[in-house]
Length: 372
Image (cartoon, rainbow, N blue to C red; front, top):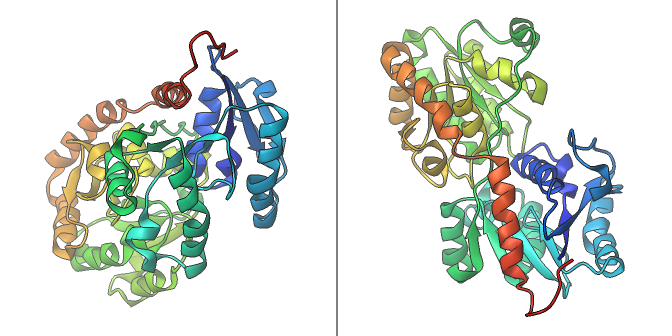
């Protein structure tokens, strides 16, 4: 069986970019009954220790060129190489295609909460994403929460959906973590949020919750990550806080620096209103950093019993959880001890293996037909 994996999302600094990169890395090692060919953004280095022959570089220097690649170039490759199945790992595929397809859906937040996005983004996902999902031979959901939304919001039969969890990979330790923290201007003691700075991450409530208890807490609040959309109100909430000088925005954290930044935190707090999976929570768990996260969407699936789960829309609940980071060291030790074993339940190798099973399910060879 010949499969084309569209990994052009690998250049994105979000969870979908991590997913495309890691899955490409593990799928390229497949030497069994499936010939997986991978389209890769020419501007990005290949993942380490992969067979380069499996990768086809495609230039995607800007959004228009990326759309051209998704809509036109991949179709040409499918025809030229007699591809039987195409996997789109980030919801979006071509408007027209007669080839069997797999689409991975990370979440349907653009349908649940369109107010969190710019209108053009909602239009983009509706215009290109929904037809891709509805036309797909099979759909991979990265959590049971996402699978539930596919059924409820789009009427997709559960029989067409496979839940395949993302993997979790621990950030690599740095040689001088103290210097790295200093370079980002981090305070000596802090609780950390790390992710995109955008409305659905619930950072305004987190800022207010921290401001409520900052007077009796020894730690600062660090909100790290790249700016997303509609960030002005988040910045304004921090500027309006009584303890504004103790709220820090160090910006995007490079992959090589994540270990130092995460392990320097007294706790990791991720009060997101809606997640398809929640990779940052998994990374913090893997490093034994105590985690506070939301009791909604997919986050309980990822965190299990290894995190303190709170109602993300209850500011008082967030304040109480932050206060416990100061007053309950036993809780922090317990969470830190249980995190790594919970994170170990999710691996990219298992994700790739399950994804290959979805490919096989999507195209069952007729009796006597070879898939070589």
